[in-house]
Length: 319
Image (tube, rainbow, N blue to C red; front, side, top):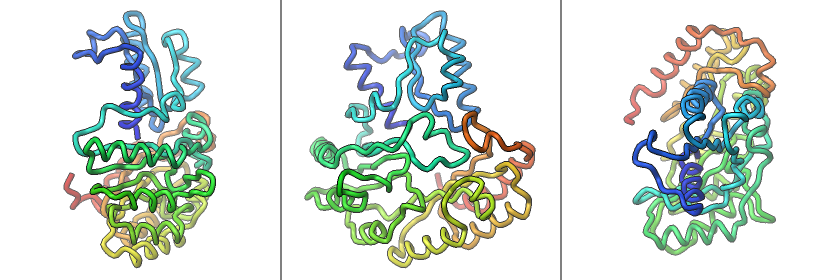
């Protein structure tokens, strides 16, 4: 999603008459596409701004917390909200694959996540515009299209939900493959699973973040499902699509996560046998509900838990 946003930002800049510099230090304008999910990424933004603010015009785009805006206001020329370029077309696609945002924002308010604060409530593009852009990408020769959204399977345009949109795209008479990212388990409906199973163009892969295998931690995360409900959902998906590959997101070291609760996550991963997992070590983000909790898991313990899951899930993954 960050790559897609960066491509669209580049399109906006070109339309304003800017040209890409060959080297960073030769640029007159530095535009940084910010992701505030992890503190380490925000720290790098501060370092970059401090390096160039007296020498170049700086624009920050993407997910930016109000607290960071206040601190950087005197050093940054402009702040671009994702809505400024969400519906722009991208001229910077790879040779064979293209990213197509269909919705932005999130209504879920997971306790660790800043997206609702930085991107706002969910907003879906019109189905007509999406179909038009898909046809345009196909005409340009792209063979793989990835539909994007912070919570892509909650897409809604009037009476057209995500399963219906997928079916419309699948029925376009052309030779291309289709993917989508990222889904929320609570919105993975039976209708969507059926459409996925019957779609000829859809690549049989699903990225479905679980975040934790412990019910108490899931409740503290405000994830709206239990570990058992998640496992039953995966079983339902695999019954409908036996060949499907399943990847996930997991956070280790969430505030108050005991060793027993972490063991529940290990058990869930062993039972589900994910094909790949993106594992994050928890870090508090200002403005989230979880930031009010005591971050009482040491950095060393978070690293240890990360290593255990990475070895368990990703040892056979060929990047």
